Image 1 (cartoon, rainbow, N blue to C red):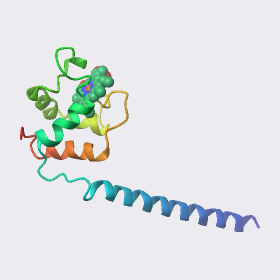
Image 2 (image 1 turned 60 degrees about the vertical axis):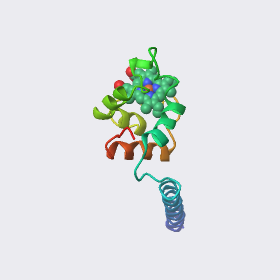
Image 3 (image 1 turned 180 degrees about the horizontal axis):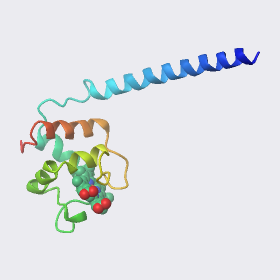
Image 4 (image 1 turned 180 degrees about the vertical axis):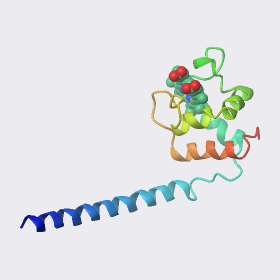
Length: 124
Ligand code: HEC
């Protein structure tokens, strides 16, 4: 009797695991599919609006958090070069996750920033 219960529990667990795996996969595909085009990312058209909406409140001008003024392209480039920008927005590595104490950026915004960096972080 006990053996049957364990088997049934394992079967149900297996099905739930299988289904949740599928749901996650399709959600990932959706966020990286046609709705998020990261080919030839433009700084002015794609990156700037993300930074303006999510980062400039704290990282613009002389009173910027940690003295990091991301509206200054040279400063932004420095944080691309040392890896902090990607680490901060992907929540990886030793840097403080950004936006500070706020939810992570949408996955398409993160992917767009990462793609822009990989494409050379152009001022385009
Ligand atoms: C609510 C204010 C706030 C917002 C919004 C914000 N930051 Fe920050 N940022 C901070 C603070 C405060 C620090 C210093 C954190 C520390 O030293 O632990 C910081 C530090 C950083 C650092 C340096 C990380 C380190 O640990 O050295 C980077 C890079 C950065 N922010 C990028 C961003 C980006 C990109 C965004 C937008 C996606 C953003 N921040 C949004 C407040 C903010």
